[in-house]
Length: 409
Image 1 (cartoon, rainbow, N blue to C red):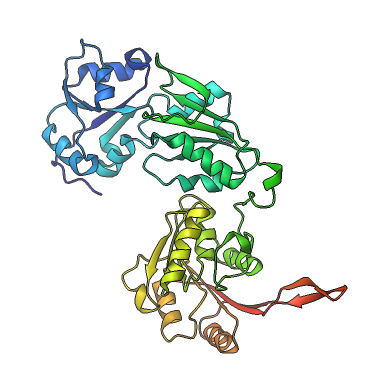
Image 2 (image 1 turned 135 degrees about the vertical axis):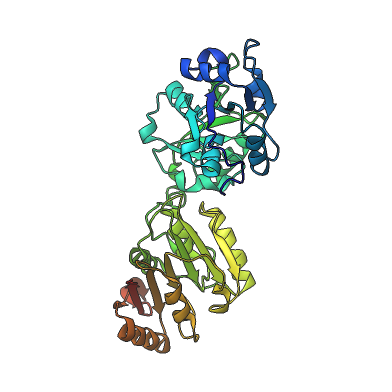
């Protein structure tokens, strides 16, 4: 959102402060706070300031986002410093203020982030450690990060976070993983200890040293590369099968931050795998049947992408008003008049469109579109070994014709 604050060019200073309080501040941050006419922050942060700091102390508004413009307007003529926990640009208010005011009006003075302090306590290199915030976010975001031998730092706030994470680890076959609780790092009440299931009410970090139980090796391993086992998805038969799905995702070319339309989503497998490629990836699954929509939501949560958006309705009508996609997959409905037209029209230059068809009628439609717009037409056949009496034979699956095109300007 762009600011509705006053038209002055006031710069807001955001100073990070840790549990070590005033003594942990850099001279630059301490000087900025001492000179400030107004200091805004949470009760815990404001309480860390010594009495000699004379600036007027103002609590941050609650709820925060609607109240921030008013706070800045009210102090547009005064020097304003906003206090943040740790690094203001790491899931902090610094990022919010930059979005609100623009980077040229925000001066950020960071403190060491909680994950930097946690990595220092544990001896874990940050460049080889995965991080996720579960503060106000679904626990299922952990799923894609649970890989054997990886280390994860999870920011948590819920009183039951330790028990909830332990339960998820057990379900996924990672129950043998050591988990460490880190809280109030740098302060007098610092905690670095094996996590138990006692509730805690403060912001903390759970450090997970991911170890897969050998007995769960066949079910707990869910790699990030597209082509998850078919058994990873609940479905009623409407599923883009593993090999076809991997080739489909390759043609769609997922790019972090881009949006996919999964049209006729069925079980949601393509949209889910698109989002698993990178945390910033987004997808909308369009599905007319309620039972399948429920299944898509369940699959998305179980596979670590609870942010997948599900839209009820049938294309092309259900596509109206949706955010413009960067890529479109049509897994069902290529023979419905107007579906391919609407999907192709929604894409901008460089957008990718991939459509699969099994029936002769659907394949004829794709061949016609290739004749009109170009692109590639590929016939994909997959055969699996199966038994025939005491012998082994190849069982061919129904061949799939795939049309893929990159839209030109």
